[in-house]
Length: 141
Image (cartoon, rainbow, N blue to C red):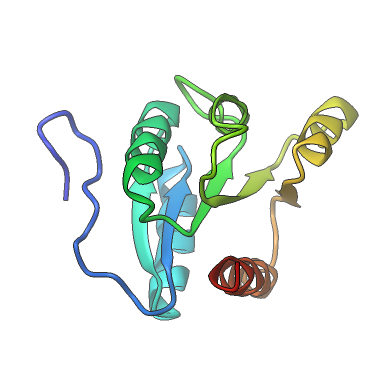
Protein backbone atom coordinates (compact mmCIF):
# COMPACT_ATOMS: atom_id res chain seq x y z
CA UNK A 1 0.00 0.00 0.00
CA UNK A 2 1.30 3.50 -0.82
CA UNK A 3 0.51 7.01 0.39
CA UNK A 4 -0.10 9.99 -1.90
CA UNK A 5 3.67 10.46 -2.34
CA UNK A 6 4.22 6.86 -3.43
CA UNK A 7 5.79 5.76 -0.15
CA UNK A 8 5.05 2.29 1.13
CA UNK A 9 2.69 2.70 4.07
CA UNK A 10 3.27 0.73 7.27
CA UNK A 11 0.70 -1.92 7.90
CA UNK A 12 -0.98 -1.51 11.25
CA UNK A 13 -0.68 -5.27 11.90
CA UNK A 14 2.27 -6.02 14.19
CA UNK A 15 3.65 -9.53 13.93
CA UNK A 16 4.85 -11.23 17.05
CA UNK A 17 8.21 -11.83 15.33
CA UNK A 18 8.98 -8.18 14.58
CA UNK A 19 8.74 -5.40 12.01
CA UNK A 20 11.40 -5.20 9.30
CA UNK A 21 12.04 -2.60 6.63
CA UNK A 22 13.56 -3.97 3.42
CA UNK A 23 15.14 -1.29 1.22
CA UNK A 24 16.33 -2.46 -2.18
CA UNK A 25 16.06 -0.80 -5.58
CA UNK A 26 16.05 -4.11 -7.46
CA UNK A 27 12.36 -5.07 -7.49
CA UNK A 28 12.97 -8.82 -7.79
CA UNK A 29 15.49 -8.89 -4.91
CA UNK A 30 13.30 -6.71 -2.66
CA UNK A 31 10.24 -8.86 -3.35
CA UNK A 32 12.15 -12.09 -2.73
CA UNK A 33 13.59 -10.93 0.60
CA UNK A 34 10.24 -9.48 1.71
CA UNK A 35 8.30 -12.63 0.85
CA UNK A 36 10.81 -14.90 2.61
CA UNK A 37 10.52 -12.75 5.75
CA UNK A 38 6.72 -12.66 5.55
CA UNK A 39 6.72 -16.46 5.32
CA UNK A 40 8.59 -16.43 8.65
CA UNK A 41 5.81 -14.26 10.20
CA UNK A 42 7.63 -10.93 10.11
CA UNK A 43 5.73 -7.75 9.31
CA UNK A 44 7.62 -6.30 6.33
CA UNK A 45 7.69 -2.78 4.94
CA UNK A 46 9.29 -2.22 1.54
CA UNK A 47 11.26 0.76 0.24
CA UNK A 48 12.40 1.02 -3.39
CA UNK A 49 15.05 3.71 -2.95
CA UNK A 50 16.98 5.74 -0.41
CA UNK A 51 14.29 8.42 -0.17
CA UNK A 52 11.67 5.87 0.91
CA UNK A 53 14.19 4.28 3.29
CA UNK A 54 14.90 7.64 4.90
CA UNK A 55 11.17 8.42 5.18
CA UNK A 56 10.40 5.11 6.89
CA UNK A 57 13.38 5.37 9.25
CA UNK A 58 12.40 8.90 10.28
CA UNK A 59 8.90 7.68 10.96
CA UNK A 60 10.19 4.69 12.93
CA UNK A 61 12.47 6.87 15.05
CA UNK A 62 9.41 8.87 16.02
CA UNK A 63 7.23 5.88 16.95
CA UNK A 64 9.76 3.12 17.73
CA UNK A 65 7.90 0.68 15.54
CA UNK A 66 10.78 -0.91 13.63
CA UNK A 67 13.02 -3.77 14.76
CA UNK A 68 15.40 -4.12 11.82
CA UNK A 69 16.38 -2.42 8.58
CA UNK A 70 17.79 -4.55 5.78
CA UNK A 71 19.13 -2.24 3.11
CA UNK A 72 21.10 -2.41 -0.07
CA UNK A 73 24.11 -0.13 0.06
CA UNK A 74 23.80 1.27 -3.48
CA UNK A 75 20.40 2.77 -4.24
CA UNK A 76 19.05 5.87 -6.00
CA UNK A 77 18.63 9.16 -4.12
CA UNK A 78 20.41 8.14 -0.89
CA UNK A 79 22.52 5.04 -0.37
CA UNK A 80 21.71 2.71 2.49
CA UNK A 81 24.94 3.82 4.12
CA UNK A 82 23.99 7.53 3.76
CA UNK A 83 20.80 6.89 5.71
CA UNK A 84 22.56 4.81 8.37
CA UNK A 85 25.24 7.47 8.88
CA UNK A 86 22.58 10.20 9.08
CA UNK A 87 20.86 8.52 12.03
CA UNK A 88 24.01 7.43 13.85
CA UNK A 89 23.70 8.49 17.47
CA UNK A 90 19.93 8.04 17.58
CA UNK A 91 18.42 4.95 19.13
CA UNK A 92 16.94 3.40 16.06
CA UNK A 93 16.39 -0.02 14.62
CA UNK A 94 19.18 -2.52 14.09
CA UNK A 95 20.71 -2.50 10.62
CA UNK A 96 21.86 -5.15 8.18
CA UNK A 97 23.40 -3.88 4.93
CA UNK A 98 23.77 -5.93 1.76
CA UNK A 99 25.81 -5.30 -1.36
CA UNK A 100 27.26 -6.91 -4.43
CA UNK A 101 30.01 -4.27 -4.60
CA UNK A 102 31.96 -4.30 -1.34
CA UNK A 103 35.40 -2.72 -1.47
CA UNK A 104 37.82 -2.39 1.49
CA UNK A 105 36.77 1.22 2.18
CA UNK A 106 33.08 0.29 2.36
CA UNK A 107 33.83 -2.69 4.60
CA UNK A 108 35.78 -0.43 6.96
CA UNK A 109 33.01 2.20 7.12
CA UNK A 110 30.43 -0.48 7.88
CA UNK A 111 32.67 -2.14 10.48
CA UNK A 112 33.29 1.23 12.16
CA UNK A 113 29.51 1.63 12.51
CA UNK A 114 29.15 -1.84 14.01
CA UNK A 115 26.90 -3.05 11.22
CA UNK A 116 26.75 -6.44 9.52
CA UNK A 117 27.49 -6.40 5.78
CA UNK A 118 26.06 -9.27 3.78
CA UNK A 119 27.61 -9.95 0.36
CA UNK A 120 25.23 -10.67 -2.52
CA UNK A 121 24.44 -13.24 -3.63
CA UNK A 122 23.79 -14.92 -0.30
CA UNK A 123 21.89 -18.03 0.78
CA UNK A 124 18.43 -17.12 2.08
CA UNK A 125 19.11 -19.31 5.12
CA UNK A 126 22.04 -17.07 6.03
CA UNK A 127 19.80 -14.01 5.80
CA UNK A 128 17.13 -15.64 7.97
CA UNK A 129 19.70 -16.68 10.59
CA UNK A 130 20.99 -13.08 10.80
CA UNK A 131 17.46 -11.65 10.93
CA UNK A 132 16.29 -14.05 13.63
CA UNK A 133 19.41 -13.44 15.72
CA UNK A 134 19.20 -9.66 15.35
CA UNK A 135 15.49 -9.34 16.09
CA UNK A 136 15.82 -11.69 19.09
CA UNK A 137 18.75 -9.64 20.47
CA UNK A 138 16.76 -6.41 20.06
CA UNK A 139 13.84 -7.95 21.92
CA UNK A 140 16.07 -8.67 24.92
CA UNK A 141 17.46 -5.14 25.25
